[in-house]
Length: 143
Image 1 (cartoon, helix red, strand yellow):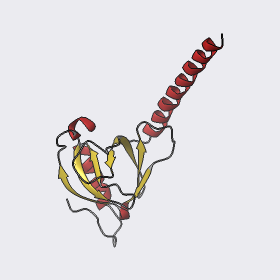
Image 2 (cartoon, helix red, strand yellow):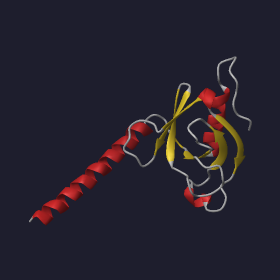
Image 3 (spheres, helix red, strand yellow):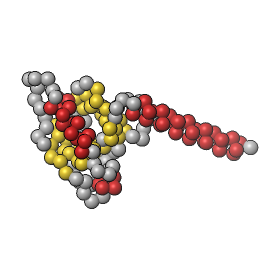
Image 4 (tube, one colour):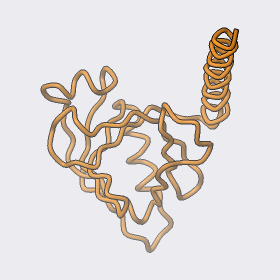
């Protein structure tokens, strides 16, 4: 009898977790997000890429893991602290680790993120956001 109870409990827990993930995605996704993968490694390889979503909030780009129950961003990229350079297409096994059509840019940030992958239109938005700093601030991208 206790075996059936355990199975029911596992099913309820899995259903609750799935509901929580869907609710989180809707709440975070409601903030006009875009697909943004990050990698703390600097070499072109499938290893190290983490799928996520980016959301702009004033001078900060918030990054949320796709598969997480955390309601807060994992990384916060302040406009003055983020530098992007060099654009390339995914190579080798990266093609399978990233979303279709993504481009990869080298990044420098104190969090250790060294690469970002996003769609070409999201990259255009990122570059526009970086360049739209108030007068007197350095623009930290060299694309």
